[in-house]
Image 1 (cartoon, rainbow, N blue to C red):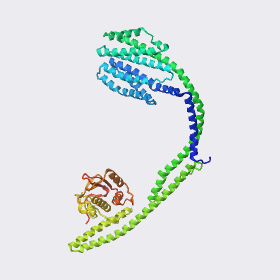
Image 2: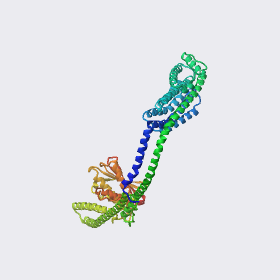
Image 3: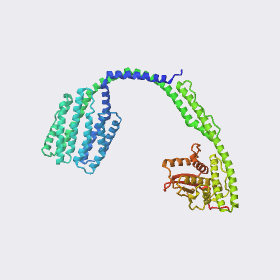
Length: 603
């Protein structure tokens, strides 16, 4: 296939389905309009909200009755919880309009109070209080039903509202059933009478709006007459002994009538729904051909584009995260560079994708060349440091030897003091020269063959610090360092002491202490300076935790780089943390392998 620009491919991919979809939905809107959408919404709402919530009401009615009757509730409460869970699961997955959503949320909020209602009932709440608590849940559910009647046919809409009103009247009858349990005390009698008045109004209003077919199941019966007579007696203050039987008989009849009315209403809705669905099917069938053709064309180009982009992404990620870092690491470690390979060429790919693959190969070559140049530069700088440091170290060693000879011969106290100052200055210069050797990954020439006491190691470090007079050395443990570790540990402590004296006010003291700890000896260097913030401490400790790579642009941290190199080389743990006095405490953990017990001192 001839290589084409990606814009052509995208246009080819997008335009046909876009045109087909616009034509399809324009035709659908012209034929069915809002009726089809409302019908689909009715179907979804009925299955996800209306039917499950109706089952919740039924279970709540049973639970309410059993609660006030004092009957066992475990089985019924489990059935109620099951119905509520089903309702929440189905209703939570459906997208409802802005008119219905607040009512649905209100129902959920009321259902959240169900555990509290049960607890209150179990703790002996009054019968009327329990009934009213359950009533609140049912009331808010019926308010939701008023916004769910979306039948596009106006006559059917009116009949549906009337059937809903009959459902509310049935709920009022259920409340009357619960109120007569346990007798007619004054509050229960008043609530029963109020419910009777409301039920009669709802019942009469709904029946007046129903046509003959839907109103037929509600023809007057003896059970209804007995119940109406019962309501009249209760309103007069009487307490008929057969009240429960009368209400139960009428309840059975009302349930049967409600089911019959709903079935007849549904039988009317189905033909109207079929007509709308036929129009939708016709429209969808005409558009289906266009959609199928569009999908076939789109899939062909989409698969190719996806395959090529996936191959390019995989190759680029492999280059960025595997091959290129491995090549850079090999260069930095002085190993022989393995050929990292290239992003494979895709001659039949989209033009821009092929260009990106070539660009990635160019980026790889440039990055490797830059890394190699940096490595060469670092090695060259390191060799310069090492050469200069070795020369300086040799001269300083000769100078220290000469000063030692002069100190031995000199008897004039003032001249001897000047020689000591010069000796101290030369010792510090030697430490700075050794810094360059350490940063060059070389080992200074100084060394001890025999163990040296910890106190002498700290004193040796102190002798290499400029402002040594501010340093207080606290009592040291009676342990010694192995000869091989003396030079590095002395240098490490000297750098920490120098850093502490530089970054703390000149009138403050710096304290050095050491004590045996888990795994070795712990040395602490504490100053009373300004310290650092938490982010700075974290950054410094992260550097000290690993092999620190010297950064030429960060020469202010030269001592920190030296400490990190020495710590990593000798497996010494160095940690910085805030001091209780506001400064910084450096904690050095010298491993047990460098410790000699008991301490031995060689003359």
